View 1 (spheres, rainbow, N blue to C red):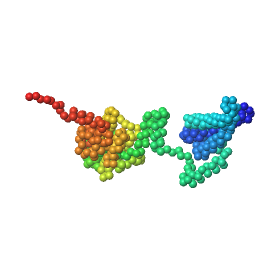
View 2: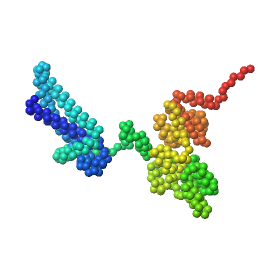
View 3: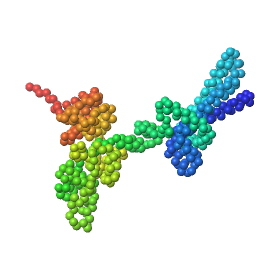
Length: 455
């Protein structure tokens, strides 16, 4: 190897190293999040200042990286192939026919140069940059800024030409690099983070419920009118206290006549505090403890209702339907449970879950289960146009449906198991091909065993 070949090899090595620098810089500055730089900026780290400058002007510095990659790639193509060909030519002269020496040495030199360029110059730096985006950005940001400043006129003119071409093609140029994500993209990112062990199951569930929370309306999570525990302004204090002792809630709506006429809410603690206070001598009247309650349409988004409740500093809201009648009520706890799950205190009665899985494709559903949840569970498309719950849907499909009767939808059979008054309480769901199991169960339940009689 002569000096000329040695210098050429050194130049090739430098160009491949520069390619690796620009490739690693490009992937690192795209991958890193601005929040990762905040701790370094707080300590006044100079490399973080340069990194912040780069990540805040991604379009310009990505253009610098692409220009650097292009220049180094052209340099490698110009130097590597002829240098390797000159080194391999004498070797092939001794092992192949003279007519094939030049062609073979050129082909092998091209493949070897391509291998070095792709593997060492691009693939390896890319992988390292993705896995160590923070460290690579902090390390390479300063030299990348220097490179950008040195070639600023060229980079500016190339960017301007690209924007002009984009406009001519009918596209809108972007002044800033796109860093926003759609809700679906964020869900996928969160899911990948959970699978990768970056967040735990509780964090994953909380974030997922936040997305669902924004799509909920108050009607879907309210306590329906039929289940509202209320006290009446017309009843005596003793009768109302009896209701409070039995139900054990903290707040009660106060009605005047019926549940369509709600005067406000009463906090039990205020009433009991005055009952046990030794210095209270005047008669305790329920109307003195009634506080205003907000009333909103049942179709209000839960998120908007929470904001309204925070503004009015109230823990309860009354929901009315399109006709002005009371549809139900909702508490702050109901809203919070949509994010964090069920919250129970020492007075809460243990309730069966809305959805219980018995076996594969075999479920027990509470009649109040939302149709949207059933659709998600069974991968069907039951209409939500007229009713919200699965029990309500069964009644709209067959108004006189009775316990033990079934209704088929898609691949599933829905069987009514129990009623609570006029409300369907429990529903059993099985795949269509197992409908005979329903019939067998009902025959055993309602038909007496046959006894043969002889004469």
